[in-house]
Structures are given as C-alpha cells and as structure tokens.
Length: 329
Image 1 (cartoon, helix red, strand yellow):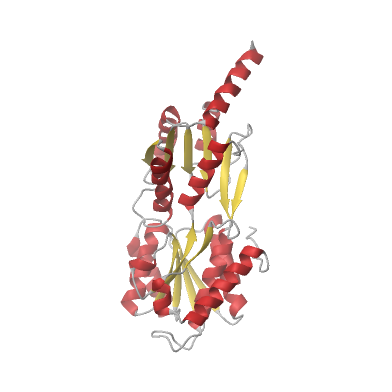
Image 2 (cartoon, one colour; image 1 turned 90 degrees about the horizontal axis):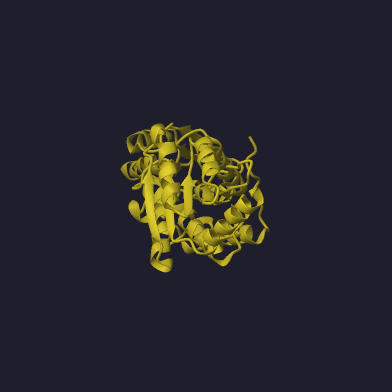
C-alpha cells in the first residue's frame, strides 16, 4: 500500500513538472521598489504572456505574521511557487514538507530541506558587484568629470548587514582594488529595505565624507541614494533592475541581478523536463544573470573608451579570464 501511494505521489509530481498552469510569487517585502522585487515580477508577467499560465503575487510586506499563511495560500493554489524567503526560511521548509508535490523554488538564498523538495537560485552577486566596483573606481579617478574630487573614495549603502549584502560589498571592494589599490571603500548598513529617506541620509553622509560614487544595495531604501546623488551633483550605481533612467546624469550604471530572467529560465526548465528538485542553481556573469546595465544614460556620463574598458572586463569575467573571489563568512 505504501509503495502504491509513493508511486501515485511520484506520478502527480511528474505531471506537475510536465505542465504546470498556476505560478505563485511569494515575497517577503512588496512590489514597487523598482529593483529586486519588481525584477522578479517582470519575469512572472512574462510567464503569463508567453506560456498563458495563471499567476498570483503574494506580498508579505515584511510582516512575520504573514509568512507562514502566505506560503500555505500559495501552495493550496499554485503548481509552482517562486519564493523570496528572507526572514522566513524555516517557515518555507515547514510548508514545503506539507506540500511536497508542489514545485518550490527559492530565490537569492539557499534553502535546503531534508527531503530535497526545495530548489534554490543562488546568484554569484559578488561578480556583478565587482563590476560595479570597477566602474566606481574608474569614475573616482576621473577628475575631469563634474563633481569628482581629487580623493579616491567610493561608497556603498546596504539595506541590511546580512550574508548577501556582505557578498555584494566584498565583490565591490575587489573590483575597486582591481582598478586602483589606493581606492578607499566606505560602507553604511541602514537596516531597512523600504525607507528611501534613510537611504538618502546614508548616501549624503558618504558624499560628505568624500565619496564620489555610492553603490546602492538596498532595494527601495536605495532609491534615496539615487536622489542624494542628484542633490549634491555626485554619482550613484543602481542595483538589481536597470535604474539608470531614474535619475539621468547621475546613475552611471546598474548592477543587474536578473531575478525575472532567472524565474523565466527555471520555468522553461520545468516545462522541458530538465529542472531538478532540490538542486542549487548558481547564476552569475557567465549565465547572463548578473552584469551591468550599460546604455545611453551610461554613455552620456562616460566617454566611449571607458565604456569599452568596462565591457571588456565584463567579457573577460564571462569567459573565466577574470575570477572573483566569493565571500566566505
């Protein structure tokens, strides 16, 4: 009897893997950040358009009381659940164990359960941050640009002091030192992801301390960094989505973390049968999932020869010629 039940569950799982029709996107925060969460939502919308699946977004708004019930709601409705589970990794494991026939994909951190139900997308964010550091270090030495002082100082504002943001900062520092070992990197962790006023305050402090460029790694909080750059005539680097157009002339580039593209890629793997439950998928520059947004806004700030140097470094990273050391806590 137990063997029969196991075969039934296995068959159901196989059918779900073959043709899911409902996809949920559960996030610890909320949409509207023009960055990380919105990037994922763009991927969800593309699934609707290209595969005609039904989708549902469940926003937890950083409310711990919503984490567990939101996961249960998603599991009761959807075949595939993409989750950004910062702060509720244990709840994710608990609910996945109760709904093992669903397809669980955790985004941006690694969550592993004892049954191998949950798969994870783990970004090599240090690679994209390395490129952001390359750009910042180049710019801080370009004293011919408006707003650049003679000091070689760059900054970063992190939404929180966690392992992912530490990885960003570590890569950022490596990229800066790759260009010029004398460049000084100053970092402020603000402890919130949804407060642009605090992001602006932190960035203004860094600019006052001599930074020419500040890298925002803080979701919606980081929008305040972009505003601060405009206010004081300095420069910023965006994150996750292409934020170059948000404050033209002051956002040099953006460190893309292609959450939406990742969701789309994983879903296609589910459809074609190459997706593996319990696997950790590592995405970086080589896979085209992290890298810089270089566009007309970039070129209005930087001369073409500098742009080409940046592109060349990114290409060498993709080929493996330039390697970035991962953060190890």
